[in-house]
Amino acid sequence: QVQLVESGGGSVQAGGSLRLSCEASQYTISINYIGWFRQAPGKEPEGVATIYRGGSSTTITYYADSVKGRFTISQDRAKNTVYLQMNSLQPEDTAIYYCAAGIFGSLSPARFPYWGQGTQVTVSS
View 1 (cartoon, one colour):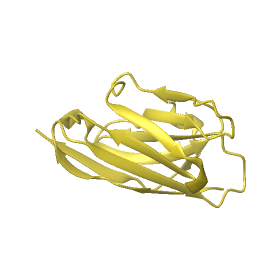
View 2 (cartoon, one colour; view 1 turned 120 degrees about the vertical axis):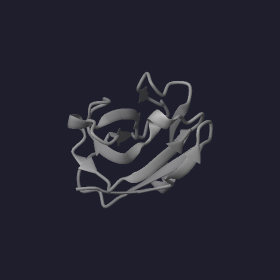
View 3 (tube, helix red, strand yellow; view 1 turned 45 degrees about the vertical axis):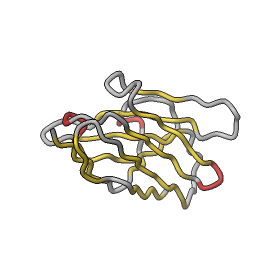
């Protein structure tokens, strides 16, 4: 099992920025990737960005096309925390954002079995 706690959601106007944080703890299994996913009302969950959390200095990340150039995923390995910096936010980015952990690098929610409780992001026009 792994425990994931998100923070940093809120309400902003279009063009604004937010930074989400995900602190991971209580690992009892090997986790290679932590990522951010979102679910808008009436829609299926979708992958936003994921990052390899291994000990290598190589950074491996995946981004959804809809957020490339606007969102940046990063991590502080010492703090077991993954961040999602979201810039140039648009109303279509409004959703509940979840942090999730898994073994494989992917943007598919089905490949991430461990999820946090989520944090609401609302972008007004």
